[in-house]
Length: 236
Ligand SMILES: Nc1ncnc2c1ncn2[C@@H]1O[C@H](COP(=O)(O)OP(=O)(O)OP(=O)(O)O)[C@@H](O)[C@H]1O
Image (cartoon, rainbow, N blue to C red; front, side, top):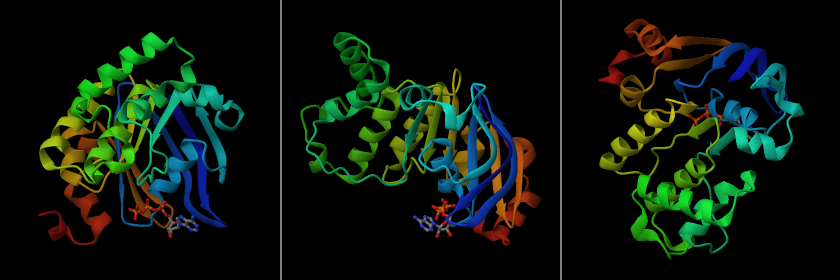
């Protein structure tokens, strides 16, 4: 479980989110929504341990986030960034196998898990290809695969649907939904319809230190969505 108590999130010296109280539990699929620049990615960066610009209490499975060593944190949290630029010519299966690094498991187990993930992500046909020579969508599928191979208890996803075709978007959202049955999935997403359809819970960041959190049914009301976008017609 990731728990935030009176957490304030900063970008440089500016506070983006103030006094956030929320818990992300296994069995929950959270959608984080809000306008551009409101602080969604910055929040994920903090939860992933990539930024320590926060105040208040953030705990992962009962331990303060800033006291968890890197390997244990990587066992607990995997993070799909909004954009990732590969610079080394790893093969697709090598890139996915990197998700296994925190676990120090045997090579054969890692190969098995990598194979399962490639099936799950429908990317078997990309085996043997360099990640530098993939299309944007193919690369996104591999990045998602690396996160799934990490088998962490908390999966952080920053706009995972970027670059993916609509058919694959549906497939991978089902995969995330299934993953959330035993783990916590926390996804930043601009596609409100997808959030409505797949997420059990929503954190709506409204800016100016305001937010709403709770089950999707209670948060994704017309009134709240109007507050978020100031214009409900954007949703039609
Ligand atoms: N590296 C950085 N240095 C300085 N300011 C930054 C940096 N990254 C982001 N910001 C600023 O912090 C604020 C929050 O950015 P963040 O990326 O968290 O927004 P977001 O809600 O994820 O937006 P989007 O929907 O556009 O992805 C923005 O005002 C942004 O300009």
